[in-house]
Amino acid sequence: MTAFSYTARTAQGDLKFATIQAANKDEAVAQLKKLKLTVVKLEEAAKSASSTRGSVSMRDIVIFTRQFSTMINSGLPLVQALDILSKQSESKVLQNVTRQVVSDVESGYTVADALAKHPNAFTELYVNMVAAGEAGGILDTILMRLATFLEKNDALVRKVKGAMIYPVVISAVAGSAILILLIFVIPTFEAMFASVGMALPLPTRIVIWMSKFVQSYWWLLLAGAFLAVHLLKKYYATSKGQLVIDRLLLTLPVLGDVLRKSAVSRFTRTLGTLISSGVSILEGLEITAKTAGNRVVSDAILASRASIAGGDTIAGPLAKSRVFPPMVLSMISVGEQTGGLDEMLTKIADFYDEEVDAAVGGLLALLEPIMIVFLGVVVGGMVVAMYLPIFDMMGAVQ
Image 1 (tube, rainbow, N blue to C red):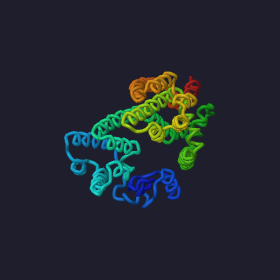
Image 2: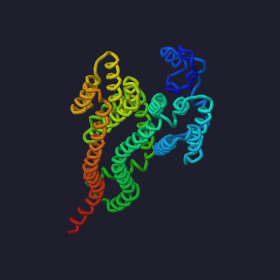
Image 3: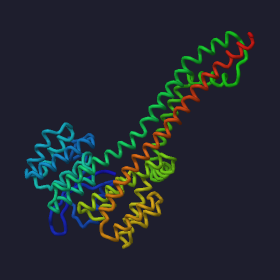
Image 4: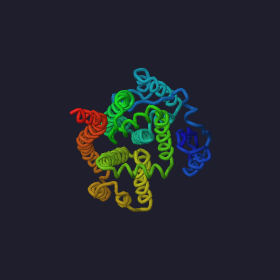
């Protein structure tokens, strides 16, 4: 998908400036026509904001949002607040983005439309919430709510990523130890055994064969690893591959539980924040589906959106995905019936933030002994295999 910046005229004759995601220009025009907009100008967002290429960290966006909220709440004019932010941001990319936002706002754009021109910094969720804040005259409140949401979402992502650091480090240490043994240590033992001319046990012969293979065909192993990663990425880029892999990840023991709970937390907090900020539930579900992070969850959210558009409830389609626990479905159903869906979603998110903490702790507690045993068995097994002939030699001497 490509981001296109457009200028279009509404049915009432007003000009609208924003961005839209589409595969190509024709599809973008078709989407705008469905929205009953007459296209005046359409171009790729990347071309219109070439000076702001580069990524902006979540932390920089959080700080930007909190400071923006504080200044607006203190009574500073929008342009002056944005101008101050453009000068004090530590990110050069964000500085350039903010300068262009200032220029656009001075030219008559709304803040939301100006932010929408920079999808590398501000997500669709961010832009929609700012638009809702401007429309309702509560931009400072929305920005503070956004900052809180981004902080919690960033903390959730870091928890899941942090859970993977330990097994990755242990795997790297184990791989390095195995390679050192195969490339430097095993050949020394092989030379010693060859000079004696004795028959070697099967485990020793296997380890020596592995050592020779790694020394002779290391390039083949590297090429195979790169090819496997490339093919996996290519397969995941397809619609079917993404669905298969994401579904497989959710079925993994322990890790699948972490991913499922983090997906539930992200979904409920995002949707709850959007609804409480004045974004319509249909638009909120569409935005939430794009930020779900898992194709199975995304499909379930889109199905619930179709259900809502047809006059049904959200909970029914979510239940069919088998991702959301019964408690979550029941609370969402109660929230729909009582008209307090945003508050109920926020309560669910708070609860599942704690559940993610517990799940990550359980994952680490399980991985630690597994990785230690794996490292001990593999490295220890290789060492024992090389000492078996020495034990045979000692027995023969005795």
